Amino acid sequence: MKKTYRLEGLNCASCAAKIERAVNGLDGVTSATLNFMTTKLVIEADEAKLSEIAAAAEKIVKKIEPDVKLKKFD
Image: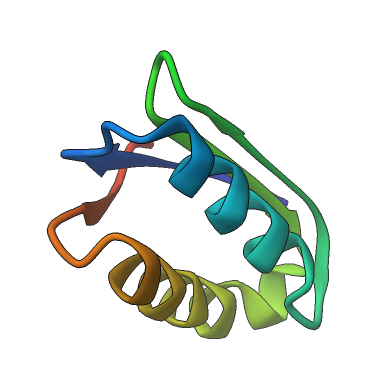
């Protein structure tokens, strides 16, 4: 299952790459792509673990970019 999130306030391409790498390393994530230009993060993962993964992704975002907010896009 795929879920799309918007990272409000993201303005650092290097940080976007760090976030993408960290989310890809989460258990249960099949793939995660973060488009810096659109600030969209697409996470493909097992549906049963998606809420757990979203919470972990939010923690990663807060750790790397404290002022960025992770919001559901769809």
